[in-house]
Amino acid sequence: MSTETEPRVEQEPLDVFDPRLTRFDIMREGARREGIEIVHYEAQYPPNSRAERRMVRIVASFFLLTGLAATAFLLIYSFGPWEYEMGSNPSKLYTPLLGLTLGVALLGIGFGVLTWGKKLLPREVAIQDRHDGPSATEERKITGETMVYIAEELGLKRRKALGFAALLGLAPVGAVAAAPLIGGLIKDPVEDRILFKTGWDPAGNGGNPVRVTREDGSPIRPEDVSVGGQMTVFPGIPGGATNEHADSPTLLIHLRPDDAQKTRDTLKAINRDSMWQNFVAYSKICTHAGCPASLYEQQTNRLLCPCHQSQFLITDNARPIFGPATRSLPMLPIEVDEEGFFVATSDYKVAVGPAFWERP
Image (cartoon, rainbow, N blue to C red; front, top):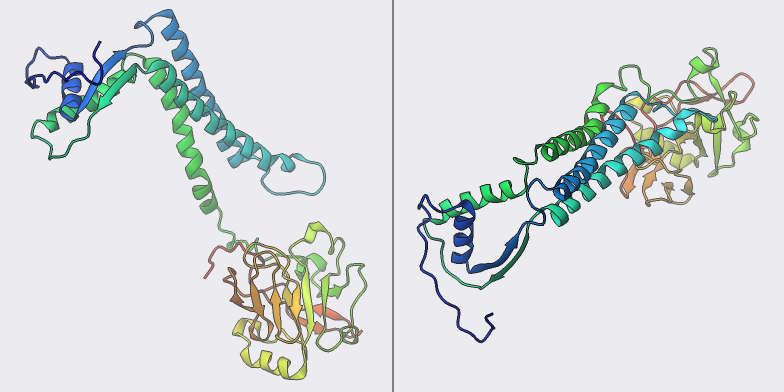
């Protein structure tokens, strides 16, 4: 047995085009020319032995488990109860089941690859010397043969069941990666305006304007909000202040006269006729991540979202002026009815919240 002090015996380069050489000989020669000496290389199991077949079945089972879990993810994603419903119902399990099936699929891939590498690939001990210099012309031949040899050592050609299991297991994973991207393009939410309907929609109130109310359902008059003050309001319909209409909380603000005039001068076309005298109402749902934007600075007329520090300028269409939000807060058209109470003349004219099909 040689030691580090013994000189290394230099071998004459082999003719890699010699047909008597095996693919392993060419691969070893290529490694030797790169300064890598393979000193130990052996299979972990005799070919087609009972132990090898057992390990192949274990690895195949991991990949098949991956395929089953990924297929289950696709089925749940495509046909599961994705629309959230109040109360105890299967919609509560939709997101957890997606997470569970995706997690099992990824674990199956991880355990399959690790077991394959640890238990089926040959054991190898190699020593490499550092050296400089360009590659020789013959390196193309060596590199090609080495890559083919590595592919053969994976055992896919001989262990067809393993390759078939890997294909069945990994193909659905690719579909899982594409499903959320493709699934989000199947239904256009603008077509039936599903993102535009909140509790302020008159259609849910028999076609009549929805009254602006407090959380307890009591209506609000203009004199209930002091100058420079604000109040969180809800649609005056059954369940208007509950999670059933979680997209409807609105901030009703009584602007100072100068600020109200500034607001009217900067109104976009879509927001014209949405103010009533010096009152303006904006959605409380932040257009960044859907948090409640409810921290109102009276002196600066800024509305702050506490989650990610987005700031909206109330006197300029609630335009975002700081933070990650990129869309203005939707304005709710309001007026006062014959009884002197605030009502919403229509629903929001743009989508509420962070999600929007055609976000600018």
